[in-house]
Amino acid sequence: MPKLRIGSRGSQLAVWQANHISALLRERGHQVEIEIIQTTGDKITNVALAMVGTKGMFTKEIEEALADGRIDLAVHSLKDLPTELPAGFEIAAITERQDPRDAFCSRLYSTIETLPQRARVGTSSLRRQAQLKAIRPDLEIHPLRGNIDTRLRKLEQGEYDAIILASAGLKRLGRTGLIKQIIPAEIMCPAAGQGALGIEIWEGDATIRQHLEFLNDAAARAATTCERALLNSLGGGCQVPIGAFAETRNGRLHLEAIVADPDGSMVLRESREGNAYEPGKLGHAVGETLFNRGGDKILEAVYRLASSVGSTT
Image (cartoon, rainbow, N blue to C red):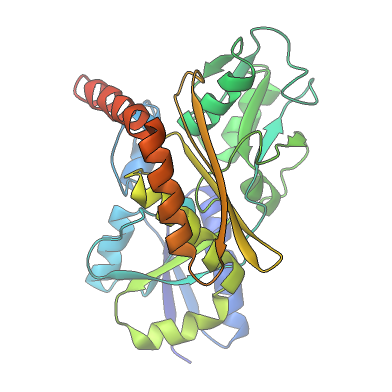
């Protein structure tokens, strides 16, 4: 069996993900090496990601390594992958999905509803901020960057009353002690692709694709293809206030989606069922509906703000 070289970001979670895929490949008889690659998103630590406005900020340098032949495959959190890959790349596999929902973490409070007035909540996600403000407009939302350990440490030290993180990452790293609530998707719609890993390769590399085929999970691919189609139809990246959560119900694909104003003053919701074998069609249709209901104006304002902030930093 050929030796395979995996490219990964260097965060604790990214390394866990790369090691997870590496272990599965080794079980199949492969020798595996992991190369850690620092990305643009890893270098920007003093600005909220939503204000950076750079597509592929967590993938560009890894894709360059793929193109140069330094690595054979890249392991990404799927939600970090742009919906339109640059020419020459493809997603060879989407793995079985961990819980895609968000987690409410706190030392003292059990739910979003029990937070005191004007509580400090940490998140740098406009999607999470918007949905929090929609149900609790009194909350004070503060930026939160860093790896999972850093974010949890800030919570434990009392810098925040609560923080919101992806439950998948916490579960993968075994850091579930401060999870007080797994937030229902009806309250906080997750990010497109959250909880799934995307394995990226050089397009047309049939040999590598064949070696990775066993990693592909049909249910996860259908659900995330639907979610990413919605995101793509809205022209959104991973840092915009768009949520999408698809799952199979009784043989049909069900999609819940939102586009929200960052201040929570407007949350557009849409849910629809479609053919599980045409996930992209369902995602695109729901995205078009949200766009025409006012999502275009919300996103235009978000991009305009990001552009103005970016030009002054």
